[in-house]
Length: 273
Length: 122
Image (cartoon, rainbow over all chains, first blue to last red; front, side):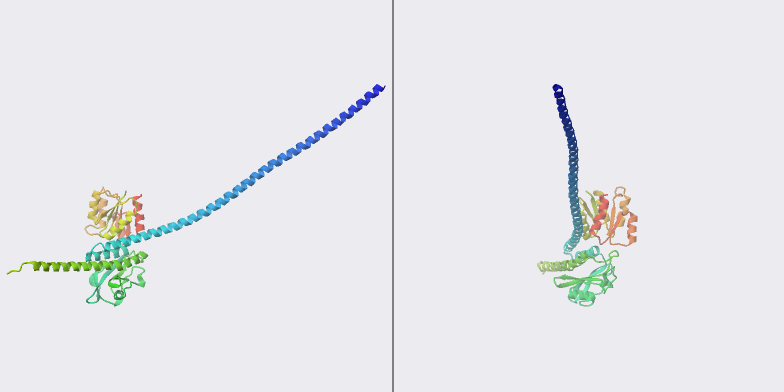
C-alpha cells in the first residue's frame, strides 16, 4: 500500500515537472516569436535607413551639379560677352588697319616722285579714288599777284575755275586762315559752284599755306564723309603741300641748272677771232 | 594659292588694292596698267580672279571683260569691276558684258576682301 502511494506521489511529481517544462517551453516559444518580430522590425528599419542616406547623397550631388551648371552658365555668358567685345574690337582694328593702309598708300604715292605734274596727278587720284570726289580743283598761291590760281582739275574745265584773291570768298579765306572748310550741306553729293565749294582744304607747310583743294561735288555713290576722309584731308593738307612744294622747287632748280649749264657751255667755247 | 590680276591705271589704286589682297591668305597679286597689259599677263600667268577698273587708257575695263569672255581659255575667270561710275545703268552694263560683280569707288577694303573671298574660296 505504501509502495503504491509512493509511486502515485512520484507520478504526480513527474507530472508537475513535465507541466512546468511544458510551460517553460511555451514561454520560450513566445519569447522566440517576440524576438523574431523585433528582428524583422530592426531589419526593415536598417533597410529604410540605407535608402534615406542614398537619397540624401543623391540630393547633395544634384545640388552640387546644379551649382556647377549655374556657374558654367554664368561663365559661358561672360565668355559670350567677351567674345562680342572681341568681335567689335576686331572689326574696329580691321577698319583702323584699312584706314592706315589708305593713309600709307596716299602718303607713299605723294612722295614717290619729284615731278610736279606727276605729284598733281597723284593728288587728283587720291581725291577721286580714296575720298570719292567728282568735281574738284587744286589751286596754288601765286606770290607775285597774291592770287590762288587753278593748276589741276577733275570733272570740270580748268578754264571755268576763276582765280581767287587771297582772303576773298571761301577759298581765299581758307588760304588766309589755314583752316579747312566743310559746308553744312556736305551730306549728300553736293553741287557747289566754282566760288562755293562744299569742302576746301588748305595745303600747308607748317603754318605757311601754299594752296587749296576745293571740292565741288562728290561721286553719286558717296553719301557722306567718313572718319578716314577727314584723316585723308589732314594728310593731304600736309603731305600734298610738301610734295607739291618740293616738286615745284625741284622742277625750277632743274630748269635753272639747265640754263646755267648752257651758259657755262657757252663760256667754255673758244672765242672766235 | 589664288592669283589675282589687278588692272588699274592709277598707281595709287593699284597699290591700295594690292595691299588689301595681301590680307587674303596665300594670294598673289599680278598688276596690269590697262586692258592690253592685262591680256599680256593673262597669256603668261595663271589667273584666278580679275579686278579691273573701267576707265583706263589704251583699253578700258569693259572691252577687257568682253575679250576675256570671248576667249575659251579665260572665259571662266571671275571678273570684278571697280570704278568711279556708280550709276545703276553702268552696273547693269558691266554685268551684261560679263562681269561677275561691281564695286563702286571709293572702295571699302573690307567689302572688297569679302567680295573677292566669295569668288576665290568658292
